[in-house]
Length: 250
Image (cartoon, rainbow, N blue to C red):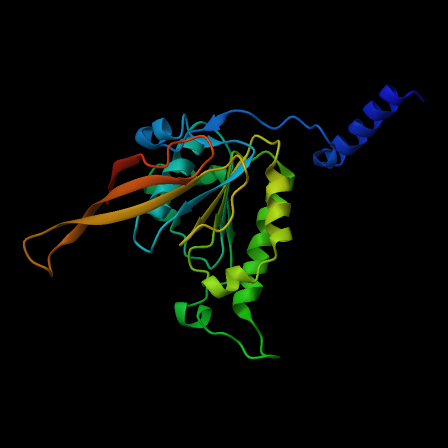
């Protein structure tokens, strides 16, 4: 068999088994996926880059999950299928549906619900490490979903994971995630308190929010919305000094 024909045959076999990402010279996916926030889309040049790992980072109650929900709503409204890897089962399906997410288009992978107190425990040698267990399950689920293909958005929610647990994840694990989504039409978005991982062509968006309250007294007030400042802090091609102000509904 000639070299060109043998290479074509090998490519066909690898593609049939979803192993074609191992071939050198594979053309990466091009295109962008909307965040659902016009202001942020403009800053990102159109949205999240497909075929890459990007991040949404920020402290608790900053609006980081709202940015993700906006992305999921935009994707599922277009008819895309999305996956949400909910590491410790903190997701709010009813709230997501109210924000426009078509739940029929979402694969919701629910992890073990652990309290903040349990997550903060550093186990002694020989003791069961539930934090490590749920984190490894979430990483494996994200990898399997990315390998399966067909998802417009894959969200890996690591917001509640303590920093000491994330530092123990080998670099090779993140690299496998990058490789799993590379060259595909999917966007893998990681949520966390601080930057964790992103691929070379991905972006990191830092969110800082200020809640807006309505009511005549502290006891009668309610959350009306969130004013968020979004800044691109990790990108080779975008201006990191530009900050976008976005108002999110309550």
